[in-house]
Length: 505
Image 1 (cartoon, rainbow, N blue to C red):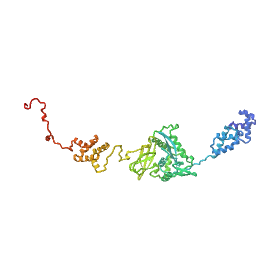
Image 2: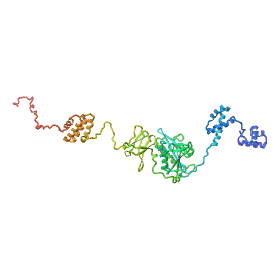
Image 3: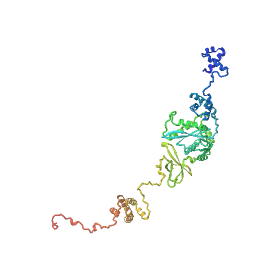
Image 4: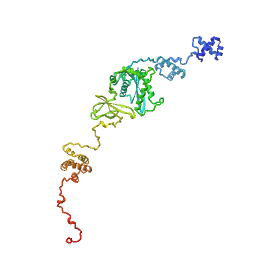
């Protein structure tokens, strides 16, 4: 086939010579080619366009167009070929593919969506969406991306998941980074925003309605499966994923912790917002300074739905349940409502517990994730608690006699615990005896003797008196000193075995 310049030169030479063979000799081509080009020109057709020949698929184009239209341009050429064969189609699969390709192209041209440029106004719109974040310690993270339509200011916040507390906490942070809240917030039809559709009308989640009222914004959703409605934030998600998620295209190293990912998001957010945008030819951070006065003022404190899932602290134990595990809270929150949520992943994973009191929301506890059956406890949350050890009892008097005995001292308490463990008989009578001895010999000496008895397991009748006697306290017998004793002495035995008579000595 001759190109345009060569075709024009051939026709100009023919007009000059009026000879097909002369032109063919001058241009090095067949005189049949010259004749064809001249006839095409004289008939009003474009020279070199060729002759339209009938194709084997011409008789079947109507059916092919019907199938392409019914499938909205999605049906495959091989499926159409298999459908045509039983109908007597004689062509090859290659001919079918060529015909289907032309029909699909015509269908796309006739049904292509035309986008009109969106003229935004300051303070009007904020769009947000999510992207897959990097994997940290085997846990996949989520990138929350927000985009202010007028200033093109972009915000990225890493999340552990896409639950309502995480999403609303990220939205609150986005408003505070922007310096205010817009009039409208646009997003997808996720469960955190839309619970269902009835006749194509989205039914809003009650949580998002309370959240929107708190910040004085109106939350709107795009049509299902129509990401072009919020193309600005879709492009922002692509930009952040291309740079923040480790890939071969950016050679970024894996993140060692969730805190490292947060720092990377902050750094890259500063980078993209301080360079000139290709559409506005201005820096987004400078345009945000102009847009900020048109944004609504946000409340001092975030909405409680952003703090996490609500939990009621029981009246008798400062523990709350979350994700099949238990976590402690300060004891003064007994009976109060707290909010629990996850934050971070891997070694940085924490369970954060908030309480909204009279002075505003406050973080009251932060735990590592616990497992079912193994509660996470902070000792400071139980100030008056004494650990319970099996077999370790604290004597508590229930009568005046018991109080009098235990009032002797630590030795009496130790004696009672050990005597009870040994199954001592008539233990009440022995306690009364110890009280009586304390009045005679003194509380201090009896307390010492009771302690010795407890250590050596001397719980028989008379053991306490014996121990007091051994300690130098005579309680039951009175003995005379040796100078006044009536006991026979040993002087007569002194001469036993000596030689000589007594007279001689």
